[in-house]
Image 1 (cartoon, rainbow, N blue to C red):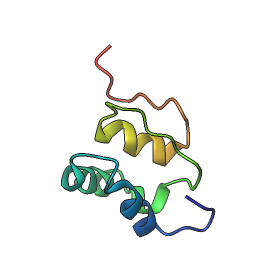
Image 2 (spheres, one colour; image 1 turned 90 degrees about the vertical axis):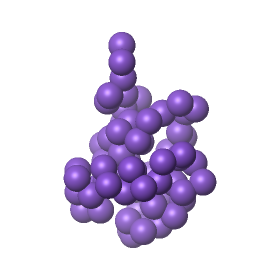
Image 3 (cartoon, rainbow, N blue to C red; image 1 turned 180 degrees about the vertical axis):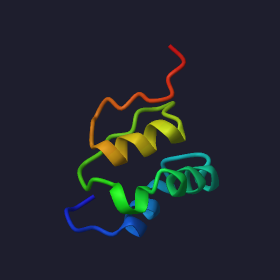
Image 4 (cartoon, one colour; image 1 turned 30 degrees about the horizontal axis):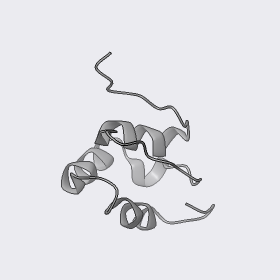
Length: 70
């Protein structure tokens, strides 16, 4: 995600990377991701859930593990 990118670009780029796009969009709306995402280069790890991906995009922290069952 380049600086100045629009939220729709983020959604489009995630469509192929996450399994549950409808739930991601619901969760993204809940956390107001459209107003708070941080542009940057994100590498999604296999097995990341929608909460982790949303938190990652919102905080810009590479190891955003919110929602882990540890």
